[in-house]
Length: 388
Image (cartoon, rainbow, N blue to C red; front, side, top):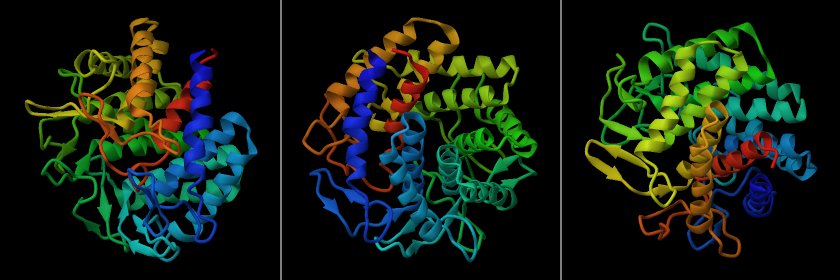
């Protein structure tokens, strides 16, 4: 019954909201819906956002077989290859204006990763060979421009011509990070999906190396948390725990383990250790998952994507361990999401976040960092993994 309820929520609440943002005049999806559910047709359109929308509707079609989702994916693919992709210097732009003109032309490895993730999913759904070719070109671009073989790390930010620049876009909490956990988990996510679409030895070797990097450089075997921000020598820059990223990484790494059919007990233990650690440390009595902790300061905000990733992370942990505690965590998390995070207003989707007493933050319901990817994916993962 849980699977059916979640599938209904995806198809009757989440996806219809986003489908209404289709921009038939300028391409892609409109860039902003504010807290009052007012659509801004002249808002900027994000490169990452476009890729995440393309992934969503490609995956929705692959899982459900419904043509309406493929039509959305076709529309988004056209916008991505015509406008988001830089045909002169290669790679995907960070930001476009509402008409699809480049506005912020910086190139970020994170953005390219989501391009690979989306294009490989679109290929899996549509069998469009051009999409797979572009995904492979972005893979080669990351490896050529974005991989530091000396430090065994992926770089972060570049200008349009692929000159390395300061990582302004993926640094937070008062630091500028030369290496981030966030970029590494999403390169892993992208390469894993590309491997599912196109299982080559080259991609496999890169994934095997990425798993080693996660285990040896990012995962703290003593605390069971992942480091977040690092300098160029892999020294941690800040005492920060990102609970949502940890639980997300646990199941994304497991996807890689399964895709490659890896037999590395240390990796298996890492995946389950992270899930138990987050369940023990950051899950609240009301069923929710809080945001992060810096030093002794705990941020109790319940962010939309953190709740969605916890659902998948706990389901994955249950599949691994058969520990019924994770089923209880799933049910409690879902009840919390339905009560507080889902925007039940007519025309609503999910709130950006809610505070400790369940009051929603008056932040945009849609903008370049809040799109369809996390909560749609949670639903699709449950639809694929569960039988009832």
